Length: 91
View 1 (cartoon, rainbow, N blue to C red):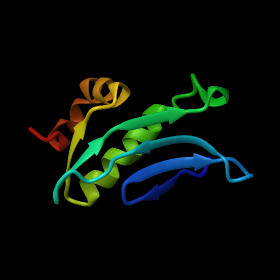
View 2: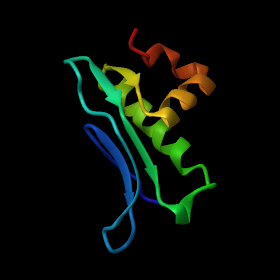
View 3: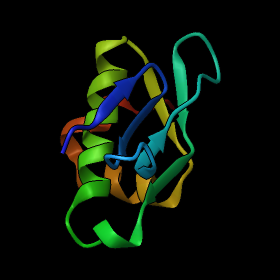
View 4: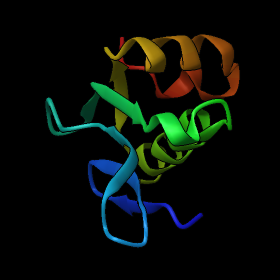
């Protein structure tokens, strides 16, 4: 699967260009993004796609020198389970 990483989004399209999965993290300040949405199409659920999206988003946020404020319920739960990324969390 070829995930696409952009400034404030990581996503996956099918061969027709239709959205299959995404996580969005728009800027809420110069150095903080809000992880506000995670979506995985029913056809891909149960395959770890959402976790992969969050991992890629976290790595992009870290690479950009920003902090994250997760508000999407999946992102909140993901960060709780991935202690190695706690340094990214905005207080």
